[in-house]
Length: 499
Image (tube, rainbow, N blue to C red; front, side, top):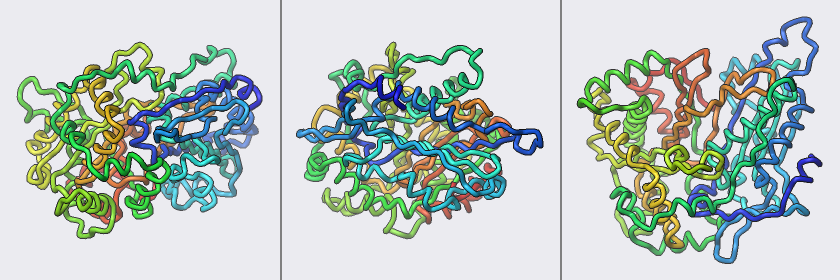
């Protein structure tokens, strides 16, 4: 740790509108590692040795000095992270042993609900509601060792205002690379190239023009309201507390589904065969279309108005003078814009550079049988919308969101009017299952996102399984309908709650 502290420089990182939009949550992820050598009678080593993990962690932290800062609110309500080398706010790092059997935990499907309550308290997954308090940690890293060295759980949680999913993966990659090198120093020295956290890089993307922006996005930020002005003037902490009270994360259920490669391929081929010549759909386009229909129908059929998006949308519509929430289905697809910006430093920037593209579907389009032609109608619109997101689009959207003090709140309010809003993030290109501290790759990787309803992650399965995993954070009533949806479950071979 002392070596890291000696490298820290006092600096301030200012947040922009994109950071503030998602400042109410952290990005938590569980990495489960199994010690396959622990059954060997001759095994006498230390699986994922504590001293190596700790040393490599602080080495990796040198490229993420922002994690040792404190979140602050400027007089203009703008958020920033201040790193003071004389008053550091070090990320939380713990490494403890559990008297818990790894194989029994594995048998439950690694159900996190069965872990000790003290662990959930220590993780502080909902700590973003107090992001700007003096003591709030911007990063939490907890290592728990199962008895008899059977396995290790590595829990990582970083404030979303600082990083996106790419940023979390970048840190984990650096940490594991250094740890591997500590195991075998004949390997090449890990990269020490610093990551970029300065949001000034966004200024290079801003284009004072909006011709490339789609109609739906322009509509969402077109007009100000009393509510958007009110929310934009609230401190981030107060706004986050309000979000938590409305979305009620305690009412959400996390569930995961594994889809085998052959079923994915069959689904993709059946939809692609219906497409006109020259139309190319990705596997993710098709699975996103199916997710949109399955969750859209489940939300439509849920008869409660007290949970999740329905509660939030009714409050929003009431404040905006509308009689009821909009009934269309809003599919919000997160896209990592780094490869699309073509900026030379984009891949070194670990702040929020994943933009959300919203696509609107009429009720009659979603409330139908998910046959190949019907899936094609949705998948084609998703592909068309995502294909428009190029360097020019990024620049114009970045300018649009930062144009007025309340623009980003206008977007949030507009989306909240839809009781049926589905957020989909595809992280299938991040090599989480390649992360290796030197004793083997993870047996299971799971994000745990219980902050907003109808949030979905599409991610790779373990290489031995193939296919993909779909992880959902849903209202409990909606989750119950999804796991009983015959069109969805015929695609799935295994599923689990409480992951």
